[in-house]
Structures are given as C-alpha cells and as structure tokens.
Image 1 (cartoon, rainbow, N blue to C red):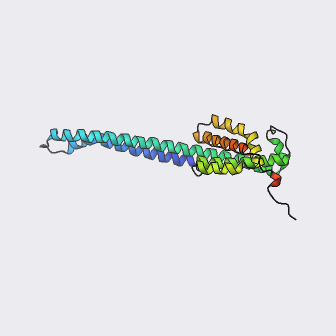
Image 2: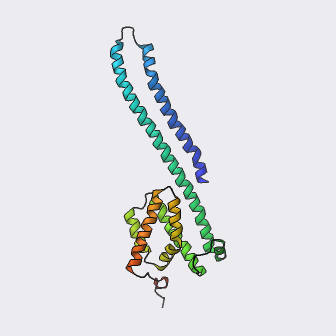
Image 3: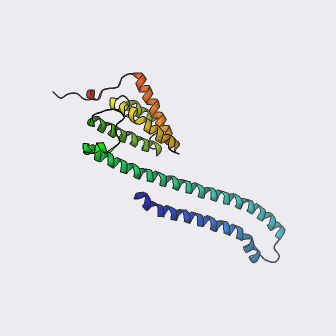
Length: 216
C-alpha cells in the first residue's frame, strides 16, 4: 500500500525533471535564431560565429550533464521504489510469522522443518530469522557497516539456536541471494557464512538452557 501511494509522486517528479531539461535544451538550440532576429544590422557575424561555436560546445557539455542527472535521478527513484516494495513484502511476511508465534497451531501452516524439532524450537528458529532479516535490511540500506555486521554475527553465532537457524535456513538464504540482482544481499550472506564458519571452528555453542541462571 505504501509503495503504491508513492508511485504517482515519483512519476510526477520525473516528468518535471524531464520537462525542465527538454525546455532548457530547446532554449539552447533556439538561442542563435533569437539572436538573429534581435541583432542589429552592423553586428560582426564572424566574431559572433566564433563565440557561438564556443557557446555550442559548452551547451553540449551542459546538455550531457543534464541528461546524466536525469538518468541518475531515474535510477535512484527506481532503487527507492524497489526497496519500498521489498519493505512492504517483508512487513507482510513478518506479520505472518508473528501470528504463528502467537498461535502454535499455525506453525503447521508453514513448510515442515528440515529436521525434526519441537514446536518451541520451531518458534525460536522463526524468531531468529526475523532478527537476521532485520540485520539484512539495515545492511542493505547502509545503516549497518561490514565491521559492525561481522561483530554482531560473531556474538550471534555463539548461541545454539542461532547456529541451528543458519544450518536449517542458510541454504534458503544462499539461494535467495544468488537469485537476487542486489550484490549487497549476496555480500550479507557471504559475511554470515564466514562468521558462522569461524564460530564453529572456535568451539561448541552456548546451549539455550545455559543462557540464564535458575532463580533460587
């Protein structure tokens, strides 16, 4: 819904930019004719020709820069539209998962887990996936740098459930990244794989049952 409401305004801005560029380009091309009409009879046209050649070269450069600006603006708007659409899909997916977390009977509506597990563990895996998905969004938007992401994954993969999530869900993340045209998504998965492998090499994870002390 948000992305649909955003399209008309982006289209309008694009049309305004294109109209301004075309108007400017038309003014540049029409300037010699306007000068011919307004110039006095004793005007030195040879000198004016030399000036106009220089002016023409500058106008070509200006036009090229203006067209490059339009192209950059169109690319940026297309990128923002894509991100908005992806955000809307992620929001819808997150809402479905939250519903399943609140009602365990809905867990069976999703695809079955690749390995047998309890309903509680399945909910924990789904919630972990929400955490990782949020990190990916921040990374792709530039709100999370590579160094910070590596540090977060280092802490994340110390946990038992985090590692189990990447074992069961990692293949899906890799397929999605390979099918995506966004290199940031592939880089995110590569960093996750890298930090997971390092965590496994460092030793066993902390069991979920050992996270908290038992109250006396």
